[in-house]
Image 1 (cartoon, rainbow, N blue to C red):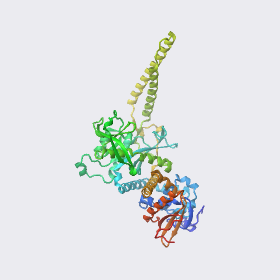
Image 2 (cartoon, rainbow, N blue to C red):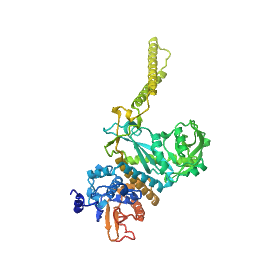
Image 3 (cartoon, one colour):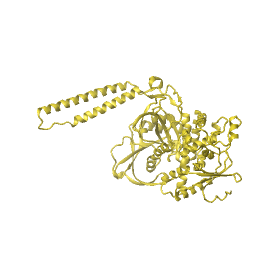
Image 4 (cartoon, rainbow, N blue to C red):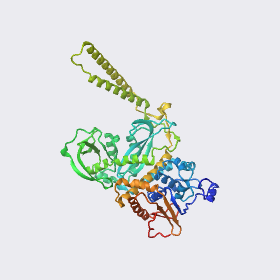
Length: 573
């Protein structure tokens, strides 16, 4: 049967096709490694882990059910088991106890089940449905959305994905770009992945904005928009990559406000224009900023608000916004809260491994898809290289000077060297001019059908990656909800203490004690590293117990407590 297989009859029936799925049956067990991850179950279910899964997905008859697979993937994410392959090195029987089974599936079995679940249309529909539900559940934060790209380098050899600049590595690498849409707290709504190099503006126009126009809740009606010409449907916030006067005007025609840093700010404003403002940041933090505001007319004649923040050293940060209703303080808080999305990327890379390649299957693109012309990119590289060399020669030419007292030979050497430098500079000028002329004759974008055979590429099958990304988004949102509950209930020494405490809970041993008579399943967590952590965990247990969550697939209500703590009032053994 294999290691830790104790439910022989169920497994034999499943192998003979006589069992649709094994039921979750819990028995009293102690000291289960990573048992604390079950404390995240109410938050996982509240954030949609099992929403619509029975309607959209199905597995062939077998021992493991949809519930078991989705719970296992979510538990893995929260316990920081970053890949299916790493399950080879965890105790399968102990992890099985967390699912109400004798053991978790073998790595190969789990990969096969993920492959069955990764039907592109079903995965897209599930992800889109969850995104709409998350927005509708919190419409107050859905009106301000952060959009940014995150590059996933690809080091494989199956296909030659286009190159793109990776800022964190300062290199041009082959890979894919994920465009994430997050709320003000950094919680993700959805992600759009593409190997194409059209950029953020193109992705916004073609993929993100059409979807947001349909999904963002609480948008003003057409009558309200007609009555107030300054009212926007919602606000998009991004970094300087989105700076485009034409794009700002195009979005305002749809009554969508845009906000970003000014890419070409003019001279500093007078210090007398700035006023001290006390503002409320994310999580209720109070900050003071010196702000000033003017109207600015962009190169295409479109008017926007320009709001500047003055730092203690006198430096000024300029923000452009077409949100004409919010006051300058709100605009500044929204703009300078972009760190929440940057922190999201950093956290997800470190703890959830969002850059990991999930599958190796390739899919073809439609041949009309446009990509950057490799010949155009090569010409641009040559122009930059020649221009840089010319700049160095020009700087050297400018530094050369003749001094009094030089003899005729030294003067002759000086004149010869300067003439040589002038000749090199002129040669570079001619080469750069010729290359620029050649670039004008070259299309910047070409279709896939027009690419040379050696440059053509396929797309790594996105459905499996999207399925895993959606589970990781649910896990991140669940962890965020628990962190918020901890901050609200407990006066932690620092706001940053909540997530480390949760990571400790998820990897701490726990006892599982079912009570069929009372229809409860007690998850008894072992003590943590210090009294402060225990106190905060007791407060979290009270919040989780108030949710009265049933373990999926059973009639057992979850009860959370620490070892040696008294039982909740309605819990008896």
